[in-house]
Image 1 (tube, rainbow, N blue to C red):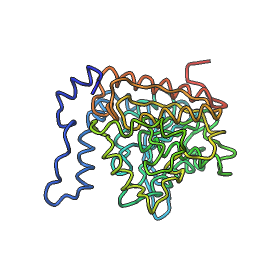
Image 2 (image 1 turned 180 degrees about the vertical axis):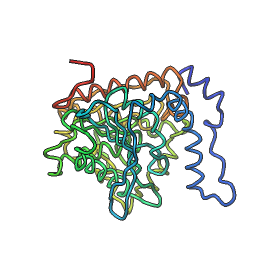
Image 3 (image 1 turned 90 degrees about the horizontal axis):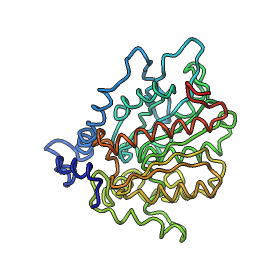
Length: 347
């Protein structure tokens, strides 16, 4: 595998990432064990940004409850302190983890930093996970959270014309893309449309979907990367089978496979990041092309020699720091695409 030299050295120092996961200990279910392993794997990212948090006096954070079908979910709201009367654009963030793992704690410290540095509010969504809650629960929870933002914009000190973004990593990016399609058709969002989408390492088509012929030759990475760390062909198939098995769930449902929407015209601008050594690489590249061909403004960046979610494992590497810098610039760019968007400190 042609890894970035710094990533290769980090993997050599952390060989557990390149081996199959150990079996769960007695009394622990496979699902619970997988979640524990994910928390350990992504702990370096949490630690890295927790050690670099802005001073707590610079931001406000609170957990809030959002009503969803069958219960409630938590969203974590962060915004800069600002001055009296200030209002902010917002990023609704959906964490990754294969629809089965992860939580709002995964990106919490990083998002607090983003909030302060970019002068943007963040709503970090703790959607319910599979297999306890299979498709479409996670996407519908996330959609409810996006609607909640509109309903509570005033009390949250938001100005959605400055920027109303949805974004996520991996599974979260999948649902972010799907949400933009769903919101485009929903009269609820007519007065407050989404203005941008940030898709990091997105999955945009179910492996069991009926791909149009013109797409089949463009998605080769899914079958090429059978032994990469964190995400490979085999465990991606497992994740999607637990979340949205097909059958009975239709793999062609655009809430799972946003690539297969009848039209992508009229969607908000998209900033997309993909890793070279990722089964999902080609999906992200293809989706950017499909959006661009539909008249959507896009920006795409690929990271050579990097595997899926490498930045969570090795946040201090040059490539991970570059990915983060690019993310901040990408969010800034999305904000400039909004009707009233600008970055604090710019004219």
